[in-house]
Length: 410
Image (tube, rainbow, N blue to C red; front, side):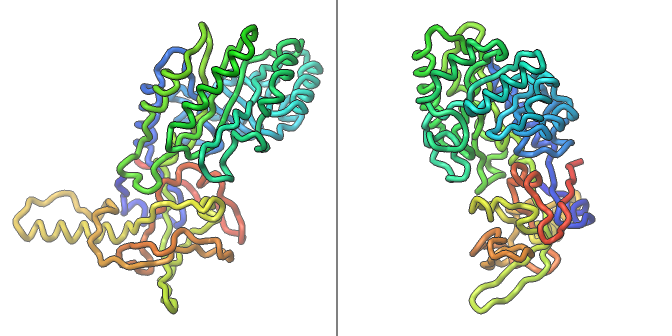
């Protein structure tokens, strides 16, 4: 990714910078890779609910996967048609269920018997059938961080396999439930596709157990991961292999639909948190880069022990100018001034080891330890890459800090 330094330097940090060209290219790849009969992709709004991002995704034709009435309203406002919106979450309130039914969303993914009680009661009082799918815990370990594993028997999400039979029977017989099928989601940031193949096998086993039950929709969730270590090498995930795996391993019945709920894989790489160096601190045995953006702007490292690639944009731009000057002195033709953009990998400044930290009054406000970066100075612009998912959307006002604004590629 190339960063327009003149544009970014003029903005007050910290802020999120979104490459809309990359987002458009990612959406195009999703559409092409998922062009199998019966396949439908929903965007997981929880990954990033920035209105401009949502409008662009809605315009591409995807549906929306939501987990609150606020996300449903955001999706409708952005242009997602109500029938292409699904509503998941373990704690739907009565008011949320009632509003979702009134709006006419495509499906409520029920996660417990208690929730089914509420949906039936509210649907009956409204005199409308509620479209319902049952979220099943298929007992598959996706081998991801324990905070984002969701498909095991004792996770708070979904219905255990042992409890599924009676709830299917109840949905099929209910006057107020339009049974839409089954919903699964086994976890997030999954980079090995093997758990998805196991999921396909588990779904086929469940279908075989209920040969007389129609499942109009199978929703396999999302969770496809991105490359946090080298985002420029893999700006778009391997959607071709992902969708092909389901096509090859989960044959659909006539008229059956297969739904996907991708979030991070769609928006993760298009977003970057741009911060500025306040101080370079000399410790006893360490050097610290202290940024003006911290865990209030990007909480993933503190919450999940996640790591985002850290790049010094100012050093990269300086190196590009130096290279341009050398080329000109050697008789090379003059090109567009390199100072206007930065390609971080181009930096040739001396490399130094730093701990990169934020300004928040918490020891966990650390983005990286023992990071090898070009020699860094007060005022340098620093990029925290792959922050388009679970970045801006999870920012907070802790320490009374303002929420980071968003800038977009031109």
